[in-house]
Length: 253
Image (tube, rainbow, N blue to C red; front, side, top):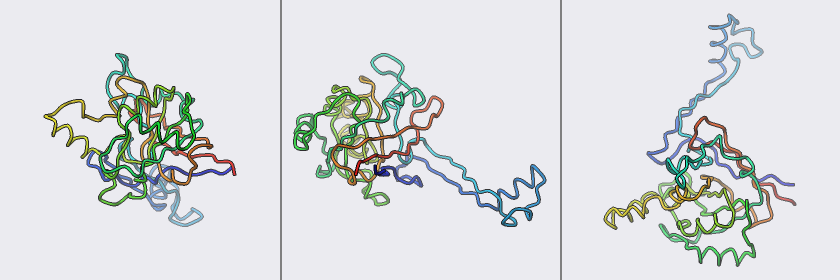
């Protein structure tokens, strides 16, 4: 059994919506803290003057590889309070994975349900309940580049709803968002006289049908279209709209 790491390194984020600040505290800081609070001489450590290292995080739970909870999508889902991240069942965070390659989509293009069915047919796979559906945009390879967040296309709301209708609860992508880029859908919204039907298409499916999605996955190109197990358990932040995830795939050699 081979483990494929399909998570990105969390360091920063290109969007003004995603604040990320990681402060790495050196070993010298740990020695000083122990001296201050416990009276331990910094020179008595095995590496004199150096004890433990630490890190302080000031960042959104949507930075790096993470799972968006239904609560993130809106305050109600089908008239009920949506689940927060610590309420999302772990049983829905692992299972048989399937990767659909959408790297060829033009910028801002939204894949229809019919087009998605054709792509699944071409790889010879039929979705089943509790599969983990993954859309590969290839955008993880553009991390750090100006076009990262808006490159390529994604599923349409119609296509996502069809996926969920197959009994699937959790989906994911290697893109910045499980939607076309913000600049694309916000432009469509404004170009159509502020028509709300263009707002946040896939995310707002979550106000009608309960689901969660992984964002900022990586290395999906190292996986076969199917035949692997996906594992992606989120950190249990209280009342969280998302949780950090170390997502992996298990693949039999």
